[in-house]
Length: 226
Length: 291
Ligand SMILES: Nc1ncnc2c1ncn2[C@@H]1O[C@H](COP(=O)(O)OP(=O)(O)OP(=O)(O)O)[C@@H](O)[C@H]1O
Ligand SMILES: [Mg+2]
Image (cartoon, rainbow over all chains, first blue to last red; front, side):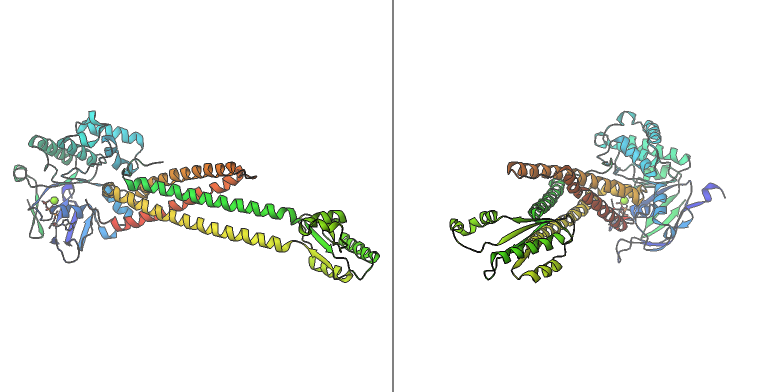
């Protein structure tokens, strides 16, 4: 089995809705391969953000089975789920940086959670700010950064722990063309390093220009378009 | 101590909570000191009578003075032989008259009046004297011998002191319970104010223990700072009250140490309720990361 055939997230007859009567996703059967790059598309309100939320176990599925790293999520303990979350990073359209922490502390947070030593933290942060071109802002607070810079910071925060999976929810939605290109190239670099990437996007041109598989949400169900 | 991730917003609620905790600690320190002072007053009152008793002999008008003197000397003999008695001292008539003067007025000296004879009995420290057998023995000599070991007086003082202490410690207990409620409120408020950070921590895979450490240590730092302030303000107030009112006793370093015990109690209990609050919140939120 080559690496691209090994599944890392698998949905089996998954149903999901907020509350009892409401149903967002129905009968979802998809298989995310390790190391793959996937676009996630669908109309506004289709359920892209909700699907990503299920992938980082931010909500529980209503019915069916969700397998992550070869095991049913229901069979994991709370601490094991925390460890799984440490291996999944999420990039949001609105960055979700912590405004009361400076660039260094924003980047250090996931490492502190993992229990890295301060020495390791300093080394990794120094390295990553160079990669996203924010070296001179290390002591600044997110508020003074431009949208593109904030998104690069949030991407840096999501890769600093070297996660197995990166979930990106319209990461280029709030930045201009030039910044979007820069940001997208960061994701492609990560993909080349072996990280599994799922990127929700409205940008049809981007999806067409790249030859990556597409998860499409339509009428409450999800299908894969190669 | 204070965490690098959690932030207490600068609003009136955040200023009010530390003030409230400080005030609560201030009150409990004040109340405990009052209990301590009442204790001290009580023991001052009873100290003077603790190791002594008096025996009163009212002269029998039907007997001549020789017979009455005989009663006195037999009483003294019995007292001297009794277990627990250290010293027996017959108070001279003149002194007894002196003592009675304020009650009877100046005429007493000239009047022929059966002046009671008073025997002052010193007891050996910390020995429980058997007053029942003593009274029985003395009763055989004469019915007019009265033994007063001040137990009524002592009981009354003790019951006043105990009532005040009971009241004070009930109040202190209530104050400490209020402190716990405030700590729960503070912890919950911290989690609400930092809900974005909380969600981010859960998203990044922080274990419950990591999150609890962040919030609890922050809540505790607030509790510790405010209760220390409350303690020192109380210390200052009590000392100035004692000083300006010229009370002839003071709270010693050791007493303050005891009173200071309020702070560890408040801090440890706050620690526990704060942890429980965080854990309960996390149970609800762990699978409900909302941005
Ligand atoms: N926390 C929530 N509680 C209840 N309903 C929600 C919640 N979040 C989303 N929804 C609903 O679920 C549906 C799917 O929303 P979701 O955000 O997943 O869509 P989306 O595809 O990401 O849309 P967009 O492209 O606009 O971001 C919508 O109808 C939305 O109103
Ligand atoms: Mg969305």
